Length: 196
Image 1 (cartoon, helix red, strand yellow):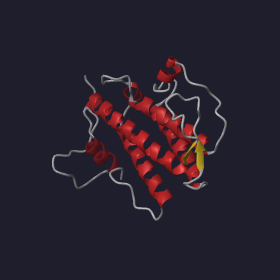
Image 2: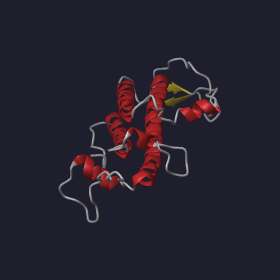
Image 3: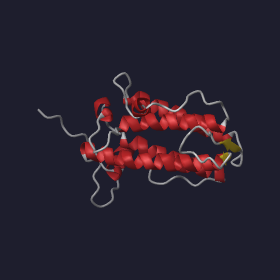
Image 4: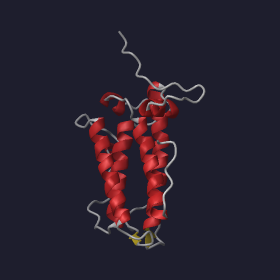
């Protein structure tokens, strides 16, 4: 259930469980959407559910690569490249983006499990918003940052989804998980009938 992360026996597994719970919330916002709906930007921002999923997969891959201390292969993106990173193009389906996000998450989890939470993760000096007075973060810090980044975008996805079709978190979770006992005032989400 996306409502709460499971308890884990150690710090690393608990951190990964909380990260996975935030990922589940993002996936939940995509529940029942068509590809066109996943590309839609119904709120005041240019964000879409599909674009958020695509972005988060890229974020996880970048941080997993940093944990492994692999050389950076790209410089700073152009404004156009940055905007494109948040778009689900017509050549990709929502299902493809969700599968890619799951693969990126599995890569992150495997990378974190292969290291100590205290291992250093070098701070790239060419990124203008990264601190200049710090040489390395820890793997623990990176996982906490991924939780924060994913949670922030889960909130964005909630707003986009509610702007798109009025669906809220509890209603989506009730539908996705087939709840038979419902909190007061909660009805499982159902797609709206097509206008005829």
